[in-house]
Length: 277
Image (cartoon, rainbow, N blue to C red):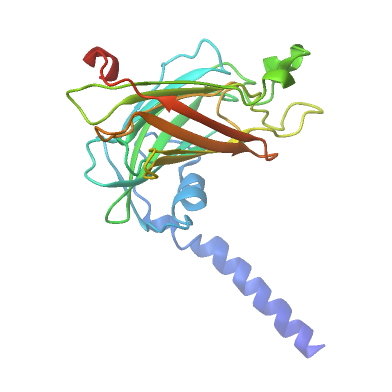
């Protein structure tokens, strides 16, 4: 009985301490430039607990996040992230704060420029932020707000209204444009896939979860880990750095049910410089 009372008292003291002092990391967070009510949760859940480390967070206006101010289609909102102003970028994590599934994607640029474009679904108006882990292990945050109508994450994919969508599952269209004045090419990849979030009634989560880009010589150009909020039939634009001898990009990936994605994309020797700005 005495042991039970002691254990109960210890638990009560632990709970009381938590509510009195709060999470230990909360005091270390900078003020959120986006003023999001989810900032403390986002920082602790997706950044400070990240397996790659990074225990310092700073707001950095050099991290550019571009979206429309007002989204016309909550299931297809264009996002462009540009972190080229940071000298060394280890990874980029994109988060939509008020989505029921906030984490959008994680990008390891490796031998690519630290920028990318894609489209996302949002459940309501939300802060969209890019967290960039630099070479010193510091998270650098850029953010913007997009106003949108509700329901983008909980609606079924348009593919489910087409009986033949399975026949085109994981079909890839891709193109690489090279600029002779720059080592960075522009690569656009589009994959036929419903990208189901699992939030629509009776439809389980089903989405592309990984893509990896390599040169013919085996050098890894970049990796991207994708989550449910990326839009149906994801189209992603990346900027790999290609050697002069490289004439194509190898793309491999899979979805969360193990369906494989594999394509070899020719890279023309020359293209208009206007295409890669």
